[in-house]
Amino acid sequence: MLRPESVTLPAPKKRRRPRPPALVPVLGFAGVILVGAILLSLPIATTSGRSTPFIDALFTATSAVSVTGLVVVDTGTHWNAFGQAVVLALIQIGGLGFMATSTLLLMLVGRRATLRDRMALGLTMGTPEPGGAMRLLRRIALMTLIIESVGVLLLFLRFTQEMPPGRALWWGLFHGISAFNQAGFDIVGGFQSMIPFQRDPWILLTMAVLITLGGIGYTPLADVLRCRTWRRLTVDTKLVLSTTAALLAVGMVGYLIMEWNNPGTLGSLPWGDRLLNSYYLSVIPRSGGLSSIPIEELREQSLVFTIALMFIGGASGSTAGGIKVQTFSLLFFAILAAISGRESVVAFGREIPPRQIYQALAVVLLAIAVVFLVALGLTVFEPFDAIDVAFETVSGFGTVGLSTGITPQLGPGSRLFLIAIMFTGRLGPLTLALALAARPTRRGIGYARENVKIG
View 1 (cartoon, rainbow, N blue to C red):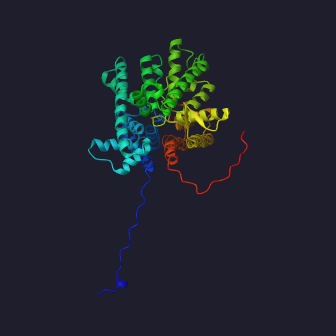
View 2: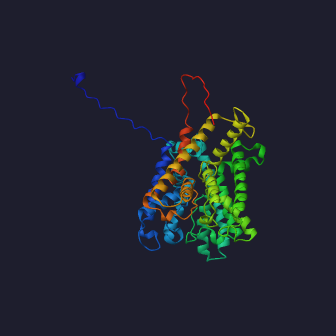
View 3: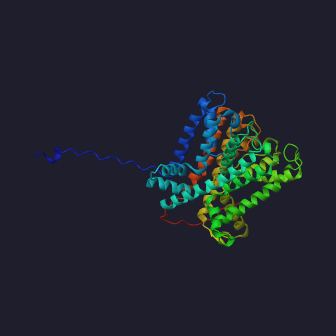
């Protein structure tokens, strides 16, 4: 008979702490970027048949997944059909989001997503219920397919007038997906972007509509289709639509005034094309890229103006970057409340919770800090003007892709800086929002209030 003290019990297994759902998209995007960089570094991805330096492949993969568009090699001439297809796949994954793409692939092969997958998907899409996230994912995928298909068809019909049908289809597919996902990549060649088509209303207006719809996102569009009247729209949709319209109008008028007589941009075009390109210019800083005029020829005041538009970006939940139009508009209404002496922030007849104002302030201040630090680092390592460095930095953070032409000339260290800020620009505000959206802890005690001096 064994004595009780002689019995050896197995040691209890240590439970592995579950990975936070908010960390899943970050690791997923990093993994996709790494796989894309490896594929793009292979000789089979280039027109020359030679390997691409890994830092250049990593930069291109990060730019594609973050749907930015900054490039160190020309997409149209450096990459062959395989390389361009890899870039396009990375753009689509980055536009939909890693969790959405992986869940869709599971559904296509007949597998069901786990509860943890559904929770992570819900966090990234702003839907706390796992079932609601799956329904929303199906609708977003359908909307994306419809809008991209219409855009690709319109571009294909126009490109067939300039090139063989097979090449026209590829050009329509690449530029349609790039525009809707705010990616900023083109295969025109020679770092020209959309400049060869600056007098083509069909192409520019199609691209502008795709960029605008992608920058608005699914939820406001679905709200408009469901309600069909301004009064019944949600405050979030009203903020997105009104701020987007205001920024487009201000942008168009601003570029017309500042660039009307600039021979390097609008000054050499007929007045009708000046109006077309000034409108298009007001669209692309919202994270779209794909410029129709040489950005390096913009006047200095126009560069500063563009930096502001790129910093704001598009709507939350869209394919655009930046601090987002809701963040910008909430702070605008907060300023109005402070000026008028109101203690609460009101937008379109609804009071905004103070917690959301704090979140908006946190997003903006952290974004300014990140942009400032990266721009400061680039000025240390690079000999370019401060305005060009600031422009490139904000373009990377806002995942815009507009460039004054200095990106291909940057050294390896500076390229790593831009890689980091593109990755941060795509995921930083998202993960920050997820962290801020966590259930707040209740304070055990209250504190006495005391005023401080402001201004």
